Length: 386
Image (cartoon, rainbow, N blue to C red):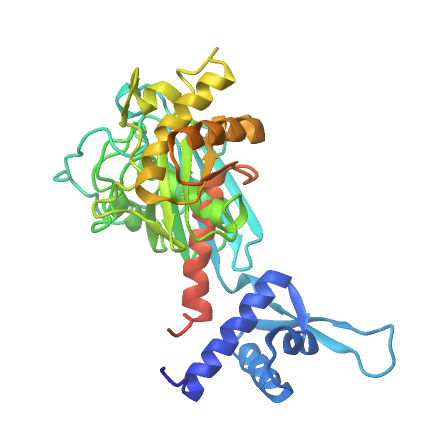
């Protein structure tokens, strides 16, 4: 067993205190001692260290109702860093900006032109290879940081990079950003970080991530949108506290995200969870359960189709939990989840819970923001030593 050095112990204790402040909002020194089990001198030292480093500050006092001096209340310095989450859909770009505590401080949205046929891109992760030999885009042009008027569609000549960068700038306002995480349909190459397949978003082009990094003055990460929805489900939704689960995304596109041993699994080429093209009786899984094709279908029939597609993941991975996300999963609620669970139990001897998504609002945007916050916490607060 590796023995912790004094420096390592300080780093562990500091991060523990910061994580508790993120969870509780504000705490006094006695509360930190009670939650951490650390001694009075150790807590006093870490508070002073975090305060000197500009990570926490006194935000008030408590104990006015008792005799003796009041206890100082500490909180994280919220504007130490800001991050942005971006959800690029086939018709809209949505951006939310938060401070390092996760409090939303800005948002913006802008519609996209939707003239491109979507038939080839209904599956969220693969449709066809992109030509990655195209130009990546040059340096930062004038006006890259200017705000964009909300509610306007792209002017002639406005490419997707300009729209995304402008929407991020509008949401951020005067704030500089520590990290930006972009969620979009399509399979993301884990080696290049770029989209590896066509995704049906109007104006998407090869090497778009590289172009965004030239236009946005912050590190930019691209992630598959279903994977980001799974991050949100794991942190604040139906999979909270679970190490293993599969998120089945049922919307205008169909896909899945796999979390095993507490980690999102992308696969060797970024295609883990590609279930939209799965061949079932009657057609592909995507064609059988996407919102475009289920109108008028009774709940039992829909549950049977979903269970048949979910069975592939359950049989191979044994995740113990399948979460139904997207518009169909959320609107179907507990009733649809129960029916899918019954159908799935009839197909597989592996015990599997089925739950509807419980993430409020835009799960993809929540996941992008949570991922960006994790980056900021690691960089600003320090990574917990192994």
